[in-house]
Amino acid sequence: MSGKVFHGPLLKADGRFRIRKVFERTTQKSKADYPEVEVVRSFDEILNDPAIELVIVNTPNALHVPMTRQALESGKHVVVEKPFTVTADEARQLIELARQKDRVLSVFQNRRWDGDFLTVQEVVKQQLLGKLVEYEAHYDRYRNFVETNTWKEETGPGSGILYNLGSHMIDQTMVLFGVPKSVTADLSTQRPGGDIDDSYHIVLQYDGLRVILKSSYLVREPGPRYTLHGTEGSFLKRGLDPQEDALKAGRLPGESGWGSEPEAWWGLLNTQVGELHFTGKVETRAGAYQHFYGNIYATVREGAPLAVKPEEAMQVIRVIEAAMESSRTGQTVKL
Image (cartoon, one colour):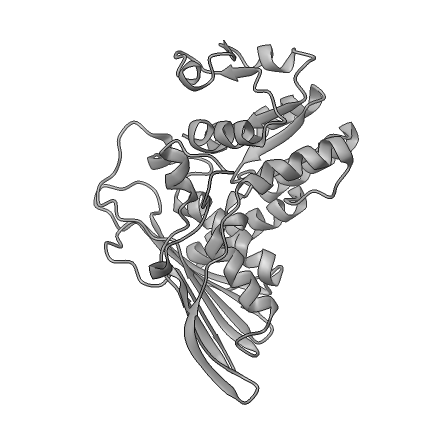
C-alpha cells in the first residue's frame, strides 16, 4: 500500500525521479502503474545496480533495520517508511552508518505536511492562543474486527498501533515542541480477539504544557482531531487531511486544489487578540506531501538541509519505547 499509494505517485508527481526497479516477491502489481520499471525477485538486484542512487525501504517494520543497513553499505541513499526502527539503539546504529558512508538517510514522516497540522503549526507559531497550556491530538479509526493475513495485526517487533499511528503523532508533537520531559502512557487491546495494542493514551509533559495523544480503532464518531487551549483562547480542528484519499483515487500533487479542504472542515478559533475578541473559522492550509521528495532531491543533488532528519526519527522511537515502558510498569518515564 505504501509504495502504490504514497511513494510511487509522489515520485512520479515530482518528475525528477526515475523509478528503475521494484522488489516484489511473487507478483508484478507495480507494472500496472509503472510499465517501464523492472520487477525483481531479490533485494540484491536493487543493491547491485550501480545506476540506482536512492532505495526506499517500505517493508514490514521488523525488516527496516536489516534492509536499510544493506542499502547504506551498498552506497545508496535511503528513505525508510515510518517507524524508522523498532528500538532507538538500532536507529543510532543506522545514523552512524549513514555518516560513515556519507549517504542521505531520512524517514517518511509525510504527515508533517498534513494541511491541518500545517495550520496548527501557524496557530502555535503566531501565539494566537496566548501561552499554550494544553495540546490534544487524536488519530482514530473504526475497525471493530481484527484483519487476517496481515503482519500489522500480529505480535512481533514493531507491531501495534503505537508504532503505526503513534509514530506520526509523536513526530508532529516534537516538530512543535521538541523532546518532552516525561512520558506517561496506557496501551491496551480493545477489540475482541486482538493480539496487539490497538489503543493508546499518552501524556507528554513539557514546561507549562501538557500534550495528550490518543488513538483507537473503536471510534465510530470522531471528535476534534486537534484541540489546543491557551491563556487567551482555544483552537479546535476536525476532519482528516484529504491527500491520502486523493492519492488512492489516482490524483497527483500539482492538480488544481491539491490538498485543500472544504470550508466545512476548517478549524474554529476563539481567542483574544489585543482588545479584540475573535470567534470564527480559520482556513486550513493546503496539504503538501510532495514537499518530502522535493526536499530529498534538493538534499541529494544540491546539498540542501534535510527536512526529516534521522536523529529526529530516533527521538520518536525513544518516546515510543518510553511509552511502552510506562504502560508496562504503570510509572511515568523521564527522558
